[in-house]
Each structure stands twice: as C-alpha cells, then as structure tokens.
Length: 262
Image 1 (tube, rainbow, N blue to C red):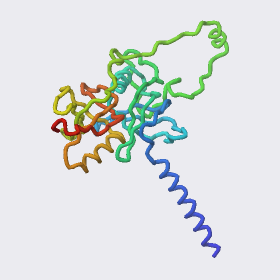
Image 2 (image 1 turned 90 degrees about the horizontal axis):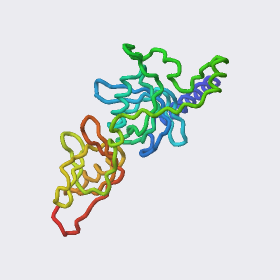
Image 3 (image 1 turned 90 degrees about the vertical axis):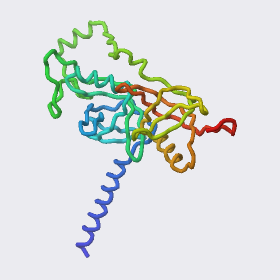
Image 4 (image 1 turned 135 degrees about the vertical axis):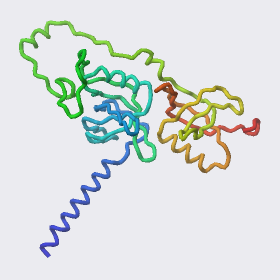
C-alpha cells in the first residue's frame, strides 16, 4: 500500500503540470490590445511570413504568453516600416503595440506602433546573427552601469528629446473603412471583400481580409447560407507589398428589403 501513494501523488502532480501547460497554450482573446510586447522580428522563409518571437514573458490579467512564443505578424504598413527599419539595425529587437486576433484557434498580431531596442548599424557592420549576445542596451530591463563621473556630467546637461523615426508616408498607410456594402468571397484561395452597393460597383478596389474572429464568424454564416450574402463592413485598411488588406471590426448582413435585386 505504501508503494501506491507515491505513484498516485506523481500522477496528480503530472496532471496538474499538463493542465497548466494546456492553459498556457490557450489562444489569447480576439481584439485584445497589448502595449508592451518585447521580441525579435523573424522571417519564416518556408511560409514567407513574418514572426514576432517573444524575448520576455507577456504577463497581463487577460494575456499570458511565455518568452519564446512565436506569433505571426499580419501584413500592414507598420510591419513594412519595421522590416525597412530592421535592415539598418544591429539586431531586429522591438517593443510592439499590437491588436491580437484569433482565427481557427490560432493567434495573430496586428502591429500598430513599434520601438526599436537595438542601435543602428555602422557602415559595413554585419547584422547580429541569431543566438549572438545582444549588444549593451539592446535588450530591455538590462541594468547599465554608468561611471560616477559620467553620471555627474549627465546631470548638468539639458534633456535631449529624440524624434521618433517614421518611414515616409506611413501616416497614409492606415485608414478606416466604415459602412461599406459588398460581398465577402474566396478569390484565389484568399478571403476577399468586394464592394458592391446593391448591384452598383462603388469601387474597383478589393481588399484581402486578415484572419480574426469576425472573419471566422462571417465564413460560418456564408457556409450555411443558400444564397449570396451582402455585408455592411467596417474595419482598418492598410497596405503591404502593394496590396490592400482589411482587418474586419464589424460585418453586418445588409438587406435590400426587395427594393433591389441581389
């Protein structure tokens, strides 16, 4: 009997550990905004997507993810700016403000703002390879020892106010689409929003839809509908690689009430 209790105790501890691991892997809530996510920008050459590899834990009341977790970054103007910026940095280390999306059990990040933690590379200086020690000051929350004489000199100086680095035209890369009527269709294997106001093409522009919970709900509705469904949508439009992308925030079914033919 005495040999059974250690076995039972071990099984209980193992079950608790498995439950904790499953809870840690639970997807984050769709629409959650994270202000201070620290990580490394990484390009997945196989799938041709950009990832954000967390370098520190995310530990917020509604969001917990350990360091080392990879999230796919959604294509947008901010991501394009980050890629350009990383080409000039010693290491692609960033702090992001993001919108978290959830689609088919997976999380994605829609970056809104970024701050680099790495200095600019000197001319002809090679970029830091993955796994190399980070340069001093590149990683956040690392104490930096300043000699006393330098500290005294710094106290006498007026504070410097650095200007944020903004890529040309970045302010025009994001805008809102509000109450635009059209169809959501699969085109070339991608979910696409096609504006169409009850038979009148209001715009020749089509938008590739980014994965989130709203898109997943729309696709379930379309799968159950016998006829084409027209939606009035609202969301955030951004450009990446010369293509317009739309992050849906609302998609409401639009009815003609028999006044127009669908």
